[in-house]
Image 1 (spheres, rainbow, N blue to C red):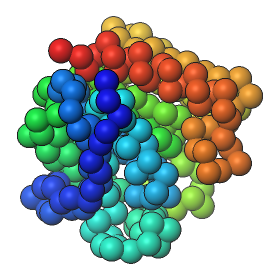
Image 2: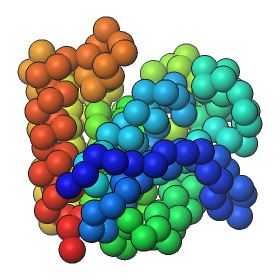
Image 3: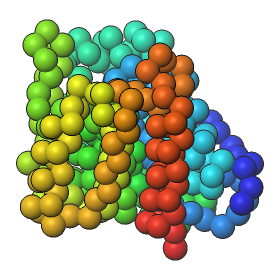
Image 4: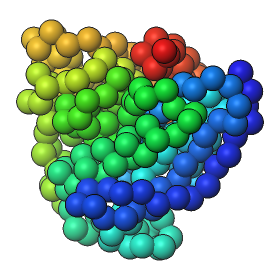
Amino acid sequence: MTDAMRAETVTLEGDGDDTIEAYLAQPVGGEPRGGVVVIHHLPGYDESTKEIARRFAAHGYAAVCPNLYSREAPGADPDDAAAAARARGGVPDDRLVGDVAGAAAHLRTLPSCNGKVATIGYCSGGRQSFLAACSLELHAAVDCYGAFVVGTPPEGSGMTVGPVVHLAGNLSCPLLGLFGAEDRYPGPEQVDELEQALVAADKEFEFHTYPDAGHAFFAVDRPSYRPQAANEGWAAIWSFFGRHLAD
C-alpha cells in the first residue's frame, strides 16, 4: 500500500440536483478499494474533517466529504456556515440523504473505488451516517458518538432534529458504533437503546464504548481529545472497513 494521494475541492450533484462543494481525497496507485463518504460534524466542513478524508486516502480508500452547508453559506468560513445552518435548525434529513447519495455516486465513478461505499460521521454526522445507512444501499457505516439517533436535542439548542432509532429495521449494512462512556449525547443509556433496537431488528453491528472518554474524543484539536480511545477507535475502523470494503 502507498500513502501517495491527491486531494482537492470538487463539486458534485447533491439532493435535488443541486451542485454542492465537496472535498475529495483519493489514493494514487494501488488496487481499487472501497470509498468512504465522510460526514462532517456540526462545526462544519472544516480543516479537521478534511484531514480525516486525507487519512482515509493514505490508507487506500477514496474519501469525499460533502459540504452540507453549501446552500446556507457558500464559500463562508466554516464557523459562519455552521452558525447559519444551526440558525435554520440544522440540515434537513431528506436533504442529507440526497447529498450522501450524490457523494456515494461520485465515489463510484472513480477508478480508485471498487464500487463499495461506506459512510462515517462524527457527532451530528454520526446520526447522519446511521440515517444514510437506513435510507440508502451501503456496504458499511460508522457512527462516531452520533447525537440524537436516540433522544432529542436539549431545549434551547436550536436544533430541530428528531430521533431516528425507529429506522433500525431498514439498516442496509453492518454498523460500527464508537462511543465515550462519559458522553451525554449520546449517553450510555441511549447507546443501550440503540443496541436493543438493532438486536430486535436482527442487524449486524459492533459497538465499542471507551472509558474516560466523552464526546468528540477523536478531535485532536479540542480538549475532548483522548488519544487512547481515538487510537483504539481508528484500529476498529481499519478492521471494520478491511472486512466490508474489500473485494
